[in-house]
Image (cartoon, rainbow over all chains, first blue to last red; front, side, top):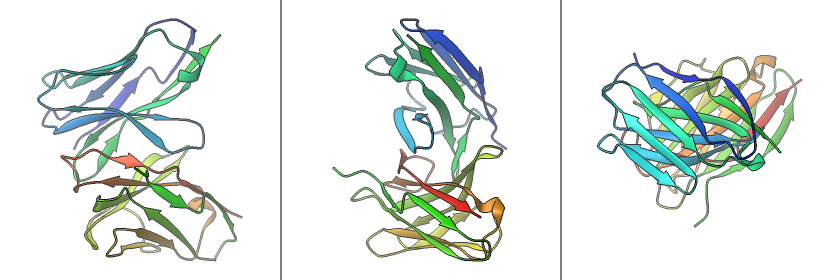
Length: 109
Length: 114
C-alpha cells in the first residue's frame, strides 16, 4: 500500500530564502508525482507534474526533482516571497491520488 | 480555457438534510474525482467517474453518492447529513482516469452542517 509523507510539517522563513520541501513515498512503481499548492479554504492549484521518466521539472522559481529509486521528491522554491505562503502537497497516483500530509509554509517580510 | 468549476462555494445545512454538490470539469476532460478534506483526516478519496461510469470508490458510507452526466459534469449527493460531514469537498478533473494523468482541482465547496 502506497504511503506518502512530507517533511517538515511546517516551515517559517524570512523573505528571500531558498527552500526545500520533501516528499517521500513507499512504493517506487509510480507513473508520476504531482505538487500542489493550497491557500487556506481554497482548492488545490497544480504546480508541477513530474513523469516517472523525468528527473526534474521547472516552472519559474519552482523546481521539482524525482528520485524513484529512493522514493523521494523535493520541491525547491527559490527566493521565497510572502505570496508563497500556503500549504504544499505532493500526490502520487494509483487508482486515485494519494496525498502527503502537506507542508505549511509561511514566508514573512 | 476555463478551469474546474464547483458550485456552490458555500453551503450551510441542518443535520438530517441532504445536499447536492456540482462539478464542471475542464472541457474535454472525461474523468472527475471527488475528495473530502477535513483538518483531522486530510484529503480522503470519495469516488471517481469516467464517461458516466463510476470506476473507483473510497471508503465512505452509502449516504455519499455521485453521478456523471454525458457532458462530463458530475454531482455528488450526501443524504441524512451528520455534523461530521462538515468539510471542504473538492473535485478533480483529468483527461483520463488515474494514474497516468494530471489532475486539476476546483475551488471546492465548503459544507457546514449544523
